[in-house]
Amino acid sequence: MLHAAIVGYGNIGPTHAAGLKTAEFANLSVICDIQADRAKIGAAEYGCRAVSDYDEVLKDGSVDVVHVCTPHYLHKDMAVKALSAGKHVVLEKPLSMNKAELKELISAQETFGKKVCVMFQNRKNNAVQVLKELTDSKKFGKLLAISGFMTWDRDEAYYAQDEWRGKWATEGGGVLINQAVHLLDLMGYIGGKIEAVKASISTKRLAGVVEVEDTADALLFYENGMRGCFYASNAYATTTPFQLTAEFEQGRIRYSDNFLYEIKNGEAPRIVAGNDMNTPGKSCWGSGHAQVIDEFYKALENETDDFLALSTGVDTSNLLFSIYESAKDGSKQVNLKD
Image (cartoon, rainbow, N blue to C red; front, side, top):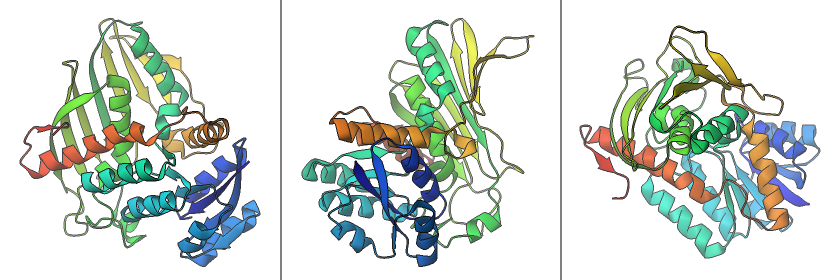
């Protein structure tokens, strides 16, 4: 049995706690939050210890794994400190705030020899797995193009909840780094290696209220010659399920709201794969948290590499940062290998 500590018990920490409860080889031992009352509430629910000082977690020799669920600007430093203290890490997105921090994180893992699991949980949604199988097996022929479309609502009240939101220095960006990074991850997971991007970002709704972007679009150039189109905005009037559409030689498949549909002109969409929302997770992003956590602890217990490793998230992170780079340089094409 491996003992876990959750650091940060605000928005996503409770989802990790629920996932740990169902994981075969995990035991939640500590919840840490600078707001002591939040930590105590979680500790009372799960019968574990509550602390408000991260150093206590690092010094606790019984803690095997640290779940980093804090605001974005703390992710890299907290993960590196955990690795240097001999802990494995489960890291929420974003993995870092920029490419330089990402390199530090990779270097720390290599130096200290501990494992990092990244929380790109949407890959584990049942319908996504079916889409991946259809793509790899070429059941509908070669994949010709892919598009991702997301429209959410994030108003002034949302950003007012936490002081770190809406600022480049502490959030690292807006809709891209916070919400749409999951969609970008799936566009790479399904479509394959992306070698270059051209992009733009803007703030259309809350200019003067937040520093960061609320709208972004990008043209993605894949290594196999395919192109992908991406659009995301949290300036919409409501939050709707994102759409990932794959255009094959012999058909069109669309992923939306945790369902997979075959789309034919003039016909009603046919459900190819259904919803699997039967485990803890945010409804808008499926139920993958629990599966990612369970797989990581099984891999640690059995000494295998069958989990979403840090290397899994490096390509998505580099894509994210390259989109920002392109957008800030007048939509100049940015090569991800540079």
